Length: 179
Length: 311
Image 1 (spheres, chains in turn red, blue):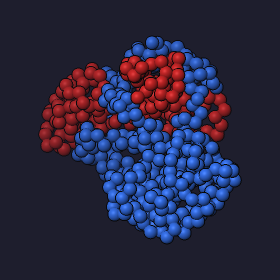
Image 2 (spheres, chains in turn purple, blue):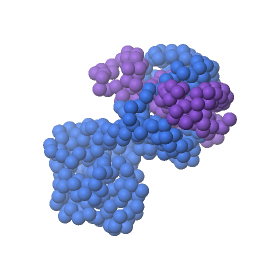
Image 3 (cartoon, each protein chain N blue to C red):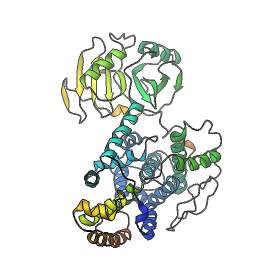
Image 4 (cartoon, one colour):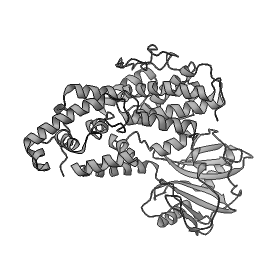
């Protein structure tokens, strides 16, 4: 399929495996949002593969990083074009936009950050965590809602925490990995 | 129902730190899905944008809910509903409406130039050119006419002022030609309302004047990939296609919607020829901030720093 450049398809395979992580990390650090970082990572690689097919490339890593940076700048422009009137200096613009990221709620809300791990808990532990943490319910209210007593809630909660620690020690698999 | 705020401080700090660290790691499922798309499915940028539906202006909940199409996502949804996340569902519909408005061709087309006028302008700009199609699109709230030529090139004009927006040549499209001098029997606003009546409540995002099986039609496209073809002479409805691609009456044909891929005005390819080479940004070794160390939060925000990455 992709025959351009000096890198054959299986090498591109390996290249992707190594650099997908790095590209994702770059975007995540910039925007602190997994969804957005994933979308930008996809965009970067799609654009990269498209160009690899059409051009001869000497340095694939440099090329990829160039596209990655452009993708980030384009994202900022798209997102903040209402607020920013001149894009003349890329450097200043990035500074402004980096600050703006924190103002404009790009960062994930805590629930969605925690959810992939909580999903992996057994049902009873999951319910307790969701009520206590996501819903900010008191021990008493949680016990009433589950028709149990306070001791049950506390014990189940502490077991859930222990389990969460185990879950968090594994690589990120979007809830597929079970402890 | 009042939605209580999540209280992360109830969790021990080592857990929250672990969560933060994990966020820096790529999701293995996402990684392998993308790999499949890149290497096996030959995904193009336009297709990906359609799938992603990422609207950069929308609140984060929209992105979260886009993942609900997966099986695990549906499990999450049921959990949220159980614990009382109904208000979250309402807000996701709201953001969907906002993003639809960005692509929708509005019912009120006052001030929009007639197709025949745009064709005349395009022909004046490209003497000797043969127009194969004219599309009305909404790009980020701006209505544009895309005039396509027989050599695969196209020009974008502001639909109200007729001003040339860009004349990118991107990709090759082979439509059946709309005959020169063709005078539509109905105008584009009428075609729009005829099509909307066929699929009420659905959002229209493109209207194209093209020839299908020898008949000149307004091909009205919807955000859910539905389509209604309206005869440009007499307004009769020739084809109605629903969201799942199923035909709902009308004539059979082998046409497909792949012509949508070359919208051209998104940021993907237009001035990316400089990527990887010297250009306005300060240094070539971009990509700082991505290396192998786990806790690399060095925040390489400025464009100058080129270190950190290795082979």
